Image (tube, rainbow, N blue to C red; front, side):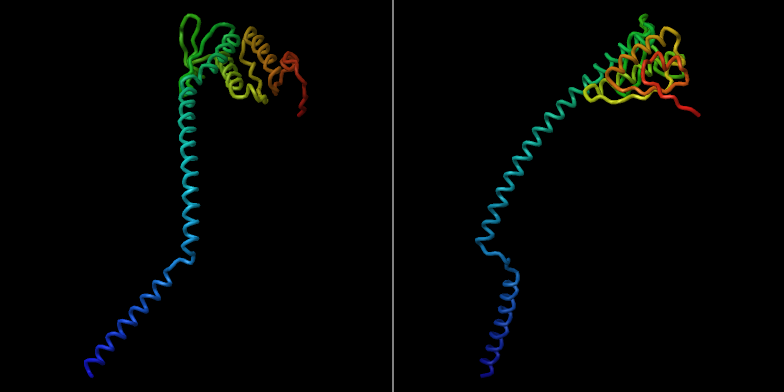
Length: 204
């Protein structure tokens, strides 16, 4: 009898442990049914396929974009240099006919005699520097805003130019006024009249 009681106690203990284990397994079961999980899996697989296709498309766009960027890097300065050279020759009265623009935007001015000068204020006369700066400014504006219009503000940029360069600068400014709105500030009534714009008097 004693052996049977001990055996029964062991069986009961094992039963209690199995019941606890069963309860834990029941609590860990998902709330959704197998049918619902199958539908969810199908939906996830469909979304995965859509995301994969989208990723493939984005990779193709990335390749094209990188290719275009490379082409732009190789040729990006060509239209800028062309516009700059055209303005530069006029604004320097033919003294400098060509500009070299490096990738870091450093500039060298080249004369018709192939003499090169860096576009540095310390090495150029005020007149040449102002002429080159105006030429470069208009060239940048042409390349950035040619299809959008816009306005340019100039602050008495003709004061250091000799008569011939000044005459050419006024011609260029008047030409650019046909494409963009130019706001020019000056204390010289003669300059205001030469620019042929709407004059706004500012009194102290």
